[in-house]
Each structure stands twice: as structure tokens, then as C-alpha cells.
Image 1 (cartoon, rainbow, N blue to C red):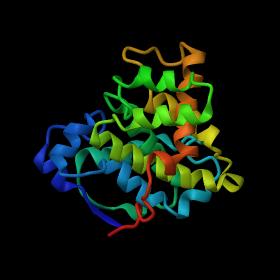
Image 2 (image 1 turned 90 degrees about the vertical axis):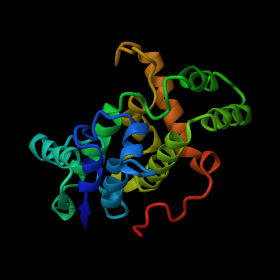
Image 3 (image 1 turned 60 degrees about the vertical axis):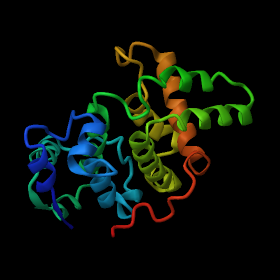
Image 4 (image 1 turned 30 degrees about the horizontal axis):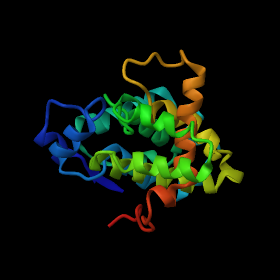
Length: 219
């Protein structure tokens, strides 16, 4: 797969992809789904879904740094170089999510998501959480949908890849949902609730994000 990354940096040459706000990146690149999210998932789906420990096993630091630089600099490159190591691609995606200035589930909705988990009745909890998801800004909603739909596909292969919804949420929970001015790892209880939010999104992805059957097919 050859991906032309130049148009993105030509429009916004001084701003790397990593660490750039989602809104700014999408506006400057004219994309609906963030470059790193879309391209990494295109590589990982479907052949990488059976890779054991995907997103959990650390990638090689040097090649991960190279892939990150490729996205940041913006050059026409043959991405098949990275098809031999799915952990590098997964690492690049996870790093992108982690380095967003604001988490995809947003700071403003953090308290609402946490409150949803305190609702004891399952049906009411899901309904309240649906209402919260629906408040996401459209760019965030579309990118969260794209990512969660993929993670749900990954979870379907958990007997092979060992990545259950719970295991996936441990990896992505603190990166997708965190409070403003948070101290990562300082509050075990809050981290567990954050993970539960992400696990719920994965388990009930068709409820929160209906459709998307052909979401990952390359045009």
C-alpha cells in the first residue's frame, strides 16, 4: 500500500501530526478520520487481528520512531514496509491517541462518562451513556466510532489474540478518557472507571455507533 502523506504537510508544513489537536489536523488535511488512525487500521485490518497481544506488546523503539516520523514529516511512502510487524503499527496508533492534546472522549464530557458508570440499572446506564456519546463533537464522534468499531473487531478474535474487551480497555482507557490536568496512574479507582467506559463502548459498539459494516474497506 502506497500512501501519499505530502498533501497534509504541504497545507500545514510546520505542524506535525502527533501532538496536533484533532480538529486542527482534520481541518488542515481535509480528512474525516485522522491520518494515523485510518492508515494504521487499514494495515491492521483484517490480517493483524489475530496477532497475539496487539496493542499490549511493545513495539521496537527504533522502527516505531521511524514510522512516527514518516507520519509527521509527510512523504510518499510504501507502507508495506510495516506490514511485517503489526506491533509497530499498533504502537504508532496507540501513541497517536496518547499524544492528542485532548482525549477523543473530551475533557468536557469526562464527568458525564464517569457518572454513567455509577448508574446501577444496566439499561438506564447504557441509555445515559448513549446520550453522553451523542454530545461528542462530530469530528470526535466519527473518529471514536472508527476506532471503537475496529477494537470491537479485535475483541472478536480474543481467543486467538488474547485481547478481550477488558484487556483492550486497559490499554486505551487512560488515553481515550482522562480528566483535565490529570496525573496518570495516580488514581487507581478513576483509572478502573475510565477503562470500564471504554470496555462498555466496545461491548455495545452497535448500540452507540450503529452501522459501519464497510467502515474499514479501502476505496
